[in-house]
Length: 336
Figure 1 (tube, helix red, strand yellow):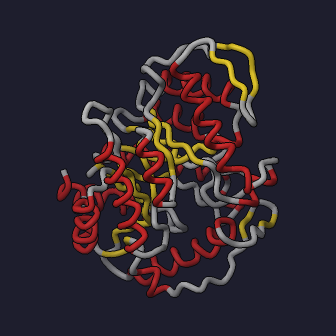
Figure 2 (cartoon, one colour):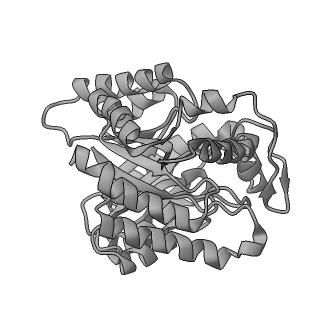
């Protein structure tokens, strides 16, 4: 099982400065590279202060310039917000400038506030995504592509420069619905999923559907992988304080993910949650290193190929860096 650090750009206080947020994430990426993590991941979100990153490909290029070995995952780029005829070329350039260390994670967009402020009705995102990913794959694999669909209509064109890797960088779809996990995996796409703060039954179903698709694919097909994203933090003392911090984070996250989307000048308003801190503790990986090893072993047994750790949910930069180092020394070696 490989391990990834999510550079999640949590920005709870404007006075901290966006420049400092990005300096912090670069420092986390450099440490992750030195400490033996396989990858870092970057979100795409606009207009909000949680998971704040409106330019993941740009940031991926900067990270590549300051690291040596890390894979850099866009986790995820929101395809309905981009024109694939332009975005395909941007992907190729980013793949070149990251020395082919880019793994292109894509998704349809999950926040109604964000999508509709940018002119994409949330009810259309699935349909737009499915057409966009088909257009993107065509542009990255063929020349003189034309299209006559619902959202794209264009005469033959060829994106330039052409991809260095056949078909461009590997593509991974972020999806929660187990049925869609199966559908995209059956099409040969890498999968990223998460139960969020949900229960183990949902996770087992997501994994089951991935394995079903994997089994049904031809033995000669390219191997696909399953990536799981979880809030995680190695806490040897006072995990309750960190769980309270994670609970406060979810008060903002839930607001835009499943809630009304109340945002005050870019700052997501925290709203009450029905899930208790004790219930949350059972569904996130905020615990001692020894307990984390035991809990991660269950994911390894399920067949998860990569774990993405979101460790930036409101804790300080000092604590974040200490956690990365501790995980590298006390957790990763058990899964080498």
